[in-house]
Structures are given as C-alpha cells and as structure tokens.
Length: 137
Image (tube, rainbow, N blue to C red; front, top):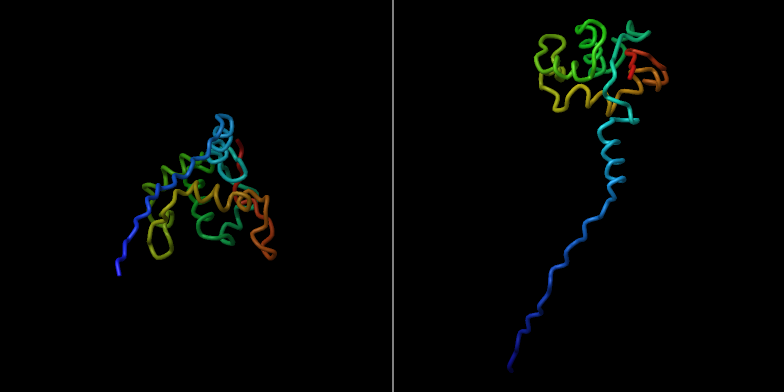
C-alpha cells in the first residue's frame, strides 16, 4: 500500500488594521488625555466644604487631599504628582503596608475618585456626598 502525504499550501491571513479618520483619532485622544468625565487636567484643586470629613473617605483620596493641604491648600494635578514623588511619612503615596502605588495620584484621582471627591457622587448611602476638594478648571 502506497501512501502519499499531501502538503496543503496555506497563506497566512493578515488582520486588517482599522482605519481612523484624523478627526476620529483626535476625538479619541482628547478623551484619553482629559481623564474621567472629560475633565480638564489643567485645573486646580482646593479645599472643599467638607474637608473636615477627610477621615471618612478611602485612603487614596485622603492622601491626595493631604498633599493639596501640604501644598498650601491649592494645587494642580501636576504639582500633586511631583509632590508625591518625594513625599514621606503620612503623605507617602503608598498602601498601608508601605508598598508604593503603581499609578500616579492624579491618574487614580481622575480615573476613580474624582466625582466623589468633588461632591458630585455619593461615597456610599451612609456617607452621602462630600466635597473633600473643589476643582476649578
């Protein structure tokens, strides 16, 4: 019995890259660069009306507010990020166990906590809305 193996020639399929118009690319980049809710990162944080409740919010927003306070009560996101690079003691940008956070303070602030920190959304049903920091752009 004679068996012949046939090889089938195949050509690899190449996935087509989606084509974006220049306008669509600019629109998407603007969303990426503006943070959550398309908030301009060129603004300034200052002390909010409910700053006395700083102990009632989670660690990262508390640290962020503490850095704004340490910077004189008003700071841009860039100033807070620079401060965090060298901060020590109770304002070290780290977990309670001392491990440093992987992301900058402003990335966390705009990506996760912004609406709660400025009092637009509730922290929880029990805590309600608290304006820990005010943001002006």
